[in-house]
Length: 173
Image (cartoon, rainbow, N blue to C red; front, side, top):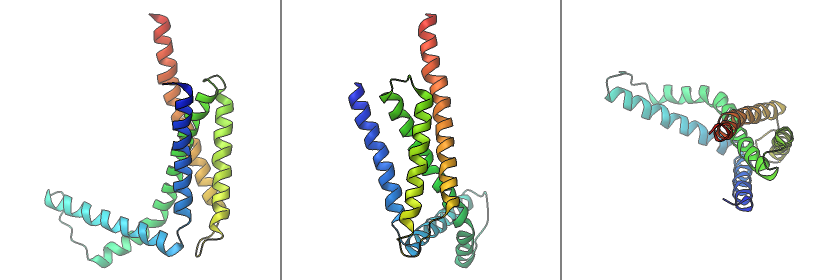
């Protein structure tokens, strides 16, 4: 694939990731928490139904207990989701930047990708200050930054094993 096409594709993917993050941050607190708690409750119910049907469990909690469990699981799950979306964003930014720099300025790609993710996370938390029921939290920026660093490490592993390994195999032949 030509370099320009790759740049366009990975730019679009990165922008879509950012738009999704912005859209999720635009939800007011009640909608945001409500959606995630509903999702967790459905997941718990479906998981119990499947495991009960296969004889793995024999558990039939009340809807009140399921709702209580979803309230307990919701906060840590939301933090994991914070990290995950920035993991994905940083991964695609690394691909984009390495294509732009022809895989020659890897450390610069790491710095730029990290900076973009941290700046975007910071701006997103500021954006949440203007959304009803939401707050901007420094801890969320830290979690987002950690997610992006893990994404960069994941990409680095891929890059070293696949890209560099592929090149060394060509040289050996």
